[in-house]
Image (tube, rainbow, N blue to C red; front, side, top):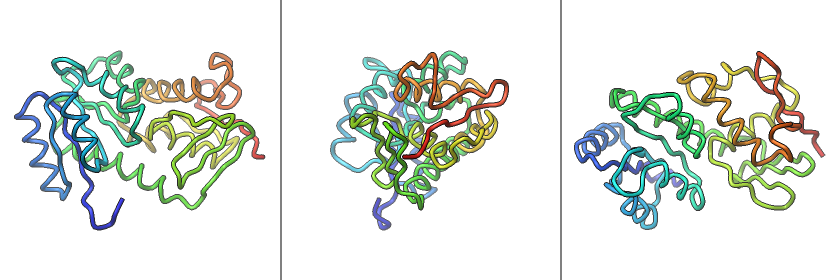
Length: 232
């Protein structure tokens, strides 16, 4: 991202009052903003200007935010935060499993939403500026500068959050990371064990030969996870 360009958040919600409220708060914090009131408008906005982050309503007429996120993940690599009136665990799990980086209930204050957008962008930018450029673990190659992951010579469709988690493991092979450590590092301590397990499960589906019997990211029962990759 150019140092002279404001980070731009695309706000996608069919409720114009919410869009206007979040736009005011984000612009007060020196963000650029773009607005969309439907999935079609969101895709159009993505095609015509640089977007750094998406704040996405789950329930919209026509194509839902969940469906839109699935579509976006096929072509764009940027943070997506869901904003929803529903706070049930299964809704959060579904949103995160489809590639969301965070799931915020609409009862949250605008200040909290802005804070969580900042946190996601900080983590994303920190990963991009990491000193280590590339890790090779047999079939798996991670390139931090290019923000790319390759398995058996084929690009892996990882979300930004999945890529950052995998890079952390790659930087510290054989080190055990607890659920709380991962939650604190990638979600600022907001969420629970489900948040972590959903993301680890999605990563395993993409890198393990048999996700039910993982050999790359293994469980340390009752504690967390350990990356078993051997550099080579």
